[in-house]
Length: 167
Image (cartoon, rainbow, N blue to C red; front, side):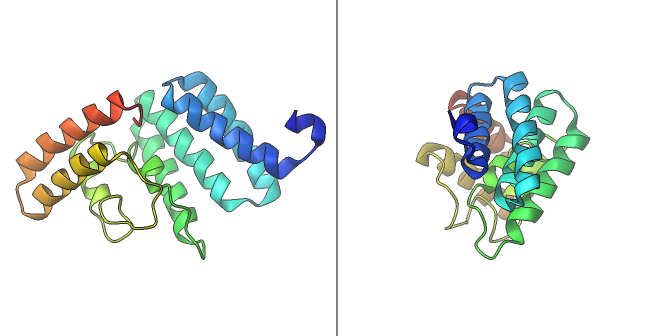
C-alpha cells in the first residue's frame, strides 16, 4: 500500500518496524532483507535515525550469525549516528544487545558505559521492567567490582531478553 501511495518517508518507517518485528520473531532472513531495504531508502532520504536503526538490526543479524566483528561495527555505527542527533533516538538497546565479541563482559561494559547506556538512560524507549531490572542488577554488580556476579547476572538478563524476544 505504501509503495502504491509513493510516500517514501512512510515507506522507510514501515520497512524499519517490519525489520524490528522480524527481529522480535527471531527471523534472521526477513530481518536482514527489511533492514537492508531500510538502509538503502533511509540513506537516500537522509533519515539518520532510520539509517541507524537499520544498522542496529543488521548488527543483530550479524550477531545471530556469529559474525561478532561485523555486529560490533554496525552496532557502534548505529550508536554513533543516534548520539550525534540533536534529539537522540531512544533505542540504544537495539544496538547494545548485539554489540561486542564477548557475549557477557563486553555487553556489561557497553551497558554501563555512561549516561547514554540502557541502565541509566531516561530518554530510551522502555524495555519491560523485568528486563530493565535484570540489566540494572548486572550493571550494579559490575560497578561494585563484582565482575563474576555481573557476568552471571548478565547471562540471566540475556536469557530473559531471549525469552521476551529482545535478543
